[in-house]
Image (tube, rainbow, N blue to C red):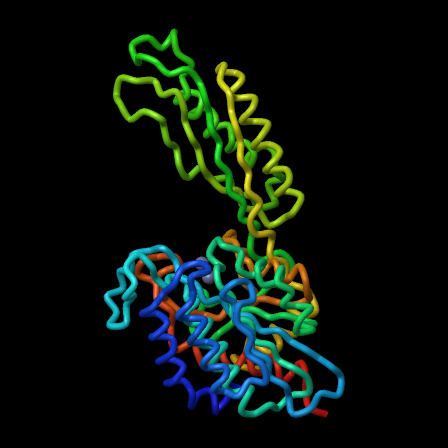
Length: 387
Ligand SMILES: [Zn+2]
Ligand SMILES: [Zn+2]
């Protein structure tokens, strides 16, 4: 069963939506234009219900099947937000909103789920209810959590939920998935080190925070190399090292370090946080300084449910001929919150040989649209078959 004919027919229209969304990227919860466009389209498709304002700027469409004999309800989720990146693609439909860019392909996700919704609303060839979920703020704002906190699962009676992300390096029109932990937890932290500033020529009269922080940066790498089991995955990255003085002859009073910890195992996540605090305290004490750690638990590990993953893979194989095993990804994904609330699965659709997501030259591949839309439609039709 290859790509659906009707969706192949809609390819041009969906591509036009995608490029329009690409030209008008919006950040985090500020997806006002995008949400309005999505809601307007869903109404035009004849969805039975269109609800806005769930999780601030999230939009939900309800499409009832030709039959409803068993009360089945499946949620399909796409993300709508862009990234604070200056676009360097040179495309004719490049961002018209300077400093914002659809560099993660959420323009493609939104357009593909809209395309599937149009098809599903036209054909209604299923026994149950399909709920299309468009969420804001996937890129660090936990929009998926905001929609869950607003009761999206309970309110629409969603029993299972499915998500999709395009992925560069996977052939266009093909799919990849894996059961269990898939995307990493993505926490971040800020460490404030305080010493005693002074003249750079009189170090003995200071407590040197630069030296302290340098030792700390190195010591924190022992979480990965000495605390975590080497067969498991954890990343500790210091991404910012800022001194309170930029002069060449002053030992700064303060240093602020920032960074992120990512892992695929909840126990390792706890270990990482605990060791970060212990090592920071120990190192600052060694040099006679003081430390304050702020640790922010962001997206949890995204765990695909076994049975739904098998089903999603079988659907992908029915569209594309096969479905490959996806690699583990140390990026975070806030679909994890939805998968904590309901069984479901998250799949990758190939974006071909393009720049990686979050790169200024990345672009979503419109050739992926027929396969992506077909997967959504087949999830609904195969999970809730009519008699
Ligand atoms: Zn992203
Ligand atoms: Zn993304």
